Length: 418
Image (cartoon, rainbow, N blue to C red; front, side, top):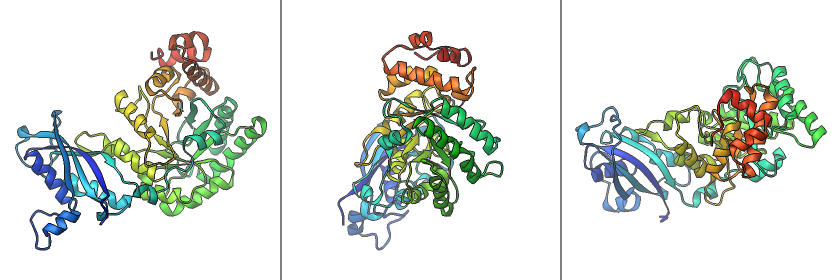
């Protein structure tokens, strides 16, 4: 029996005594059931039962209890609970780990709310899972951007352009000095612009640009598909000279991401589409800090975190915590690049750098580039000049005075954030 363990941190609410609710959670997810059974000996419990490592009561938020929760809703209390699971219960296997730390516990009626918010993992997981292959340094090398923020965009419109039209957009963006371009998560292998035709149309444009300048922008082709198609889709891109593939992590699953990582020879751009379904509620689900550790173990070289002033539900504080989480060391793995997206434009550069403190970021602006009043090339210029100004330590208002593309962007997107 190994003395190694996984410690999972939860936020729970319950109308039963807090300690009892925590023990129900630990028992349900290890040796226990609703009643003590014959072979559930003290020895079995001592060796394999999950244990409540700590319990700290915290204030209620006022959210409604989950359906089916027992007890008086007005008697609910809230706590941060840490549960220690013996590693030998599931071994260094992420699918089986999830069965323990995020399985039936969401259905336990004693819990009026339960959310997994963090995981402490032993070194055995890094021995089993390879983690990112390229990370920050490898991405910079392949994109030809050794320093400064990596600037990227998404093909827009996300659906509806023909492969030839996509190639025209890529040509304009590459000529403007973009570092990174990606398919939208909605652009998979549809009839209008199937993957094989996108690759055929886009790669010659990038190769011609590389021949002229010595730099080939990274294009992340969306290869999301059934697991048995991932390797062939990857090979299609790589054989054509592509330097990145994109996968929607929640659509292929963590095991699918690990499958791709073991076969990939280029960076994997990890999109978190559908993440809100498992994280948005404060009452139930899995928080980003816990989830991103598993994603990084499974090999995502880039991982979406959203950006400040985004168009979605997350607050700036939540976004900044997500960026910080991805940048924190994890079991000696290669670093993953935080990907800032959602409503990003040049006027956020100074505030973002001030809050994050690093340019080891991939910043994606879709509408913020394609929607620029003077076109996509001016959108790229506005982003590049704003981020360069921020890196020099200038203030945002000075940047507006010195950059015509940034000034023009403010006419559409509003004032820069200071």
